[in-house]
Image (tube, rainbow, N blue to C red; front, side, top):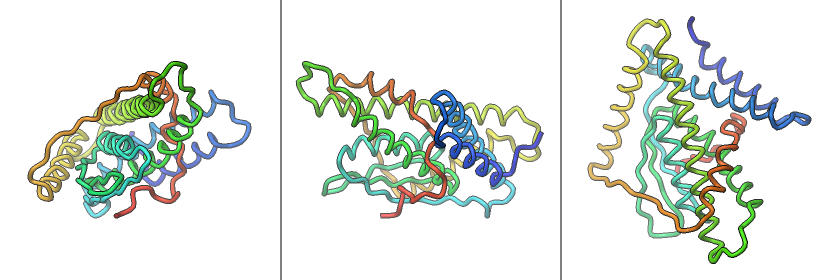
Length: 242
């Protein structure tokens, strides 16, 4: 069975998210609605990729440089890079002499859009969660505990988004379709984005982010409960050009 047009999928996402945010919706109902929204968002990415395989003008590769302000700029950068990577973008963390962080994100327009939507939403959820998180008695460094909480949250939501993307790709691969397979389409797109990144940055190195506090497991648990589709499409973009 052919999938819905990408525009129809986005319309369904909007409606699901509006229902999830309406007054009177119970937490279990909201969770079910937003889980479906995340599933459709992943499907949207697949369908945009398929469409562009036959009509390249519908989804061009691009890039954005994003400046991330404090507080917690490195953690927020980790969130952005993880979400973008899960949604088939590729990132380079740039050196900056001032406070904050700067990331250069490469990806197709539809994937940059999807990463934008989730990053915007999850920044708000992460901030809300940290505000109400209770620091246990006896913690020596409250800041270290909070940073580890944030990293736990980030790890959980990135894992969930990556799983949704993988399920969508696997499901699409089993469907009858004309032209190249979904796996080949996605692989070709990955090569294009990798080449563009390497043209801009011939030499890069991997980085790691560490933590010393004991809030990681609490943040991870909150991240598992986070709504990974609760930012309405059409809101002000977080991934604006620098």
